[in-house]
Image (tube, rainbow, N blue to C red):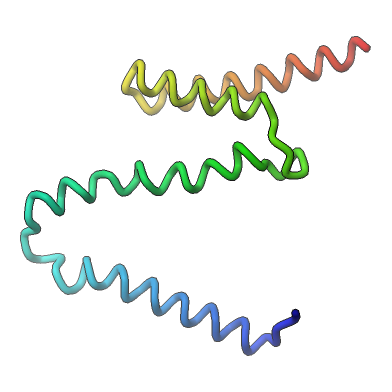
Length: 115
């Protein structure tokens, strides 16, 4: 199914307006009023809820492998989570995940070159 340029721009405009209204509801309408403590407590979980939804497809169906699961990326994600839980430090967790990913890719590249 193909869409015309006008239809695509209409969809983009509607999504932009919707996004603006969602944000404005928090920032513009109630941004200068104190929020109840339970709302503030729930808002702290927003990054924890959104980040896995953004990262999981990149780990489970990476474009680099044509959408096929890759053991190295899964191990890097598990290492990131493990180090994050152990150290409670985001930077150490990210560093451990990156080191695992690139170390695994380098190791498998070296092993592939030996055959």
